[in-house]
Length: 406
Image 1 (cartoon, helix red, strand yellow):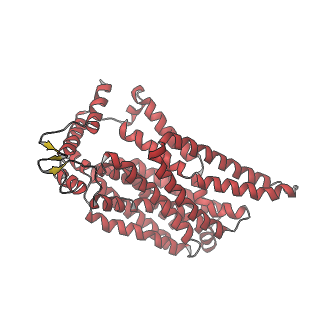
Image 2: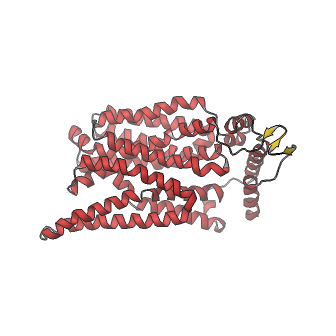
Image 3: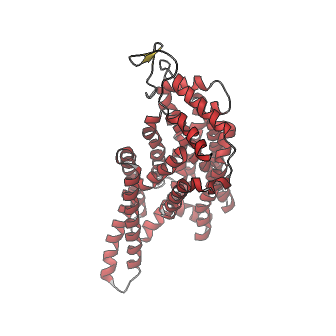
């Protein structure tokens, strides 16, 4: 019975049969039938949505260039600053746990508004903080905001984009995360930490205002029983495009979804879903244990402890990330998720191994020759990690593929 329900649920998404209406030379009743075109509304809506991805990146990249300034101005110990950096992930977990319910209850746009309010409050708390408590509360609020954004942005883009164009537009999500992180790395070498936090509020405010001008997700509108889902879909596909087939698919999908019994967390442990759950959760676990967040949060300190000028190194990190992420997004649909994931994971492993080996050799002060080679190992390790950074992005897309289609 469960297998039948799964089959029924996926058929509306994959069906290609023609619906009612006379079709001649690619038109139906005088309207074009190609619903896969990229329209101005679709592009603008995607760009506005990925402002949230940019905010995500700024939050990840903030702590690295700000470390010395915050510790000196507020007199924080290394332990206190470590709490400040890592509490972002705690807020992210809280936001992620509630993200699905929030996005279903108030809509995709509403969830993005809500998340940006959390982010603005968090940035302002950091800007005006006088002690470690305000810093931590601001960072926690920021984490809650990006936890929501990490879910709702890719979901919104996937729901408004034609099926054969999702790879192109969802790739912007990870690209903008990297851009936000790079901007923070680069700007942090020129401005102090309070101004840097103030810069972080700019994309938040921009998205809050811009969300007024884009349509809500047609799938969410149909799911909540609102008839305007057709008009929203028409805006995304173009006024001269026949959307009857896609609208029928969305309607059939939502009706089938409502007919299915409510699934709870415990249902994930059924044997039917064992394979996709193990693969999806396993990818996320290995991604996080890969240690890339550590490099993002403490990049400047790592560079400085290795004897490399932290300003120059941080700027190099900012510049190196973007082209590698672009390469990963470009290759994702051409090479495939699995080969790119395997190559990227292998490169990340090699980079981390060489970096760790470099610091180990650096501690052997009695061998000066080894110390001289240490910097070589370090450079190889750091550059390897930067080069294969798109491996983490590929893991994200593998997880989403399993989430959407299994």
